Picture 1 (cartoon, rainbow, N blue to C red):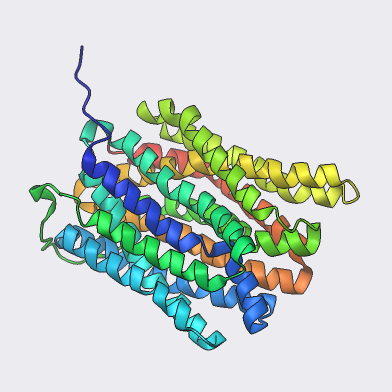
Picture 2: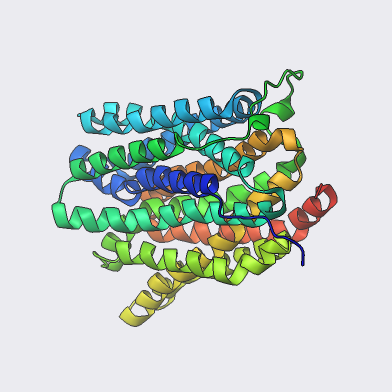
Length: 402
């Protein structure tokens, strides 16, 4: 019987834990920031969208250079510097007394956030046995997916209990430093610490071999960007659901967990396009259900609740399938020396989508209302779905190196 290399080794578990903490710290504030900006600074919907999308611009600028530095310099040092900068930025939220200061802090926070996500995910690949890499990346992606689902739930419940945004800012700061402490204990194999002296080119900063995969990912990032940032205020103002946002993200996390049970076997067998396609279709149904039910049956509380909470499970299940599949697809079209670049490319694409979603969602909501903003989400998601099945799937299959 063939010996199977160990997936859950000590270093991999540490990197996964650190990844969970950094995403938890960042997204525990997510759905509450629009409320915070509205209540404390009296910001309008379009201004909220502008403020919250600022970090995405910096993240997108930093990510390509992050991939280059992670591939070209000692990864442990890059990892710790990035994590320290990421954690320190949370202190800025505590001291930002004006809307301008808050905007500056939030925007600058995108830099270390973009860098640490690239560095940590690349280190995760380094500590995985090669025979379990596809499966391991799938579980690694689940750690940030779960954090993005669980953190808003916990943040909302804590805010309802304490009524204090300051408490949440302190929580994010402490959790971030805890993740940094965990990553500090990770041991990397000596062979991964190399200086890349190759001639600089575009492919050192953005994986051109995977460009269409990245473009396709933008549509899915756009959808989640609108949902995650405007869910709480939409539920409160349009649907009359004042305490349901925490439950929504909790159900989303249940869908993410189920996705690993359902899709783990396909990932182990390398059926990446199968997993991606399945997740994309499930997500499309979820986003459409979310806006269609209250629009078609506005006088039926049961229909509104089915659309609202039912979509949570479906979107969680769909994202749990498509995210690790797309990350593996991007890595599989890259050379081993381009792991950092591959990771930065897929993350850049997600960030572009998230940023466009946050910005466009705020503008559309201000001009036409939240209903139109979420119909836009369903339409963009449908375009992403058609793009995948018509073009991206074949694009990957032709360029797959593994």
